[in-house]
Amino acid sequence: MSVSQLMLLKKAEDDYAYDEAIRTLRTNLQFSGRNVRVIMFTSSMPDEGKSNISLSIARSLAQIGKKTVLVDADIRKSVLLSHCEVKGEVDGLSQYLSGQRVLKDIIFETNEENLNLIFAGPFSPNPAELLEEELCGQMFEALKLSYDYIIVDTPPMGSLTDGAIVARYCDGAVIVIESGAISYHLEQKVKSQLEKTGCRILGAVLNKVDAHEKGYYGKYGKYGRYEKYGRYEKSEKKGKGAKKEKNAPVNQKQSISKKSGHDIEYWNLNDHGKAGDPYEP
Image 1 (cartoon, helix red, strand yellow):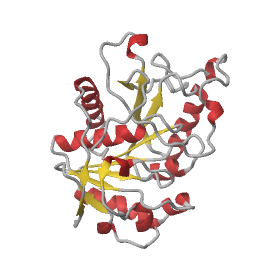
Image 2 (spheres, one colour; image 1 turned 45 degrees about the vertical axis):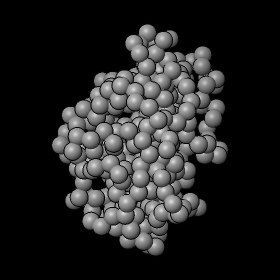
Image 3 (tube, rainbow, N blue to C red; image 1 turned 60 degrees about the vertical axis):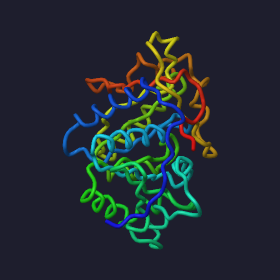
């Protein structure tokens, strides 16, 4: 499959604990089954860290020799391009789905072995309709023929349908949750949406855990802040309904499974709640 080349920026500094947490997440994903190859990462709201985790897990899989492609399906507000050294404009998913480009035109090889990228492309006023296109399913089927893993970064699902549409093409989903900031009720809404699509929920990453407050040892690096989308259910973040258990913020002691007979496993990645982007030129 023909690809173009670009430079993927390296992390500003090494963080052993963070890298070890990503390796643990990678191992969990590998043990999810050999048929689980198309994996989406989503969240309830912006700023929970899903895009950086998507990139980190794609890099980690590539490092162990797994041919991996990271698909940025967040056509509304992509941040993947900010992690790359790119001169000029690049073609992306929105152009492919609208018939302006063929698949080989939107696949970019990076300076990291085994890792390719597909960017979201220019903003589209109708991303949900584009993702519904038959071309989207055809793309994932074609990628399966060339890659061991397809990691998909999707928009937050708290008030958008895009993620649920993409979930139909995926073998599994990982929910990224900002510790103490997202209500149990909202996480249940996202979980219910995923279940309706038939996409298997592989687990959840409890992100931005305060290691000192929760008694963890060490720290797990920093995550970049996700750009705001516009009108989201901001009332679902800190504050509203905090007195009621069902609306209390999700933390490391709480499960988002409800009367299901089992808890969803949490893979904790800690960053002391700090903002900041770990990637720079």
